[in-house]
Amino acid sequence: MITYQEFKRNLDAVQKQVESACSLVGRKASEVTILPVTKNHPVEAIQYVQNSNYKSVGENRVQEAVLKKESFASAMDWELIGHLQSNKVKLAVANFDRIQSVDSLKIAKKIQEVAKSLGKEQRILLQVNTGKDPAKYGFMEEEVTDVFCEIYGCSHLRVEGLMNIAPLSDDKKVTINTFHKLADLQSQLEVLNKCKLPELSMGMSGDLVEAIAAGSTMIRVGTGLFGARLL
Image (cartoon, rainbow, N blue to C red):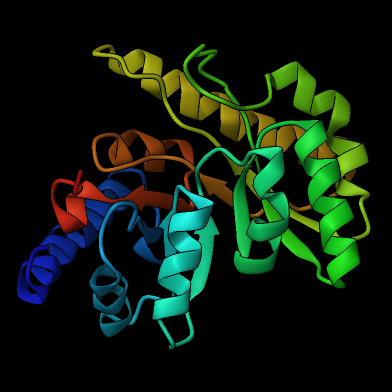
């Protein structure tokens, strides 16, 4: 695990990258949130985040996050950014403030069912595979358009926006196209359904410039803050 001083240097560097990327397209840095991703890092990583006045962390695995949450007594918002299996939904709803990776109607309905039983309004994002990457989870664009109204109308779900992951590619045009498609879809869904979807979670350390140019409101950064993940 890196030291807190190393983490702070990394965080400062990422913040400067965000500021620069925003400046290039006439946006304010305050419009973009950095979500520290603590997957495969010890609970100390979460303490680093809190010490730097950040209030949320991203985790990929439900059970790993639950164990960390049990060890971390202070208040923190927990965001699930990894694929959610049906058999983990109850645990996820009980422990995560927001689930970014809602990637099917089946999962959305299951989250609704569990949230209702717990008397909780579950904040969610819909993950969309705008890069048409067979290695990624997510709704297809036309699919999410067709089912959005049904999900948005669920009594115990609060749909706050969209999320995606760009395909691994050396071609920047692929990355740029993936992000712009999600931003366009956000606008279309807002008009069609007369609603607001303020969150666009897209971009990581290697493609935050392209994501911010396309309108990202949240970038998810792990290695760029904490270094290589533990095995």
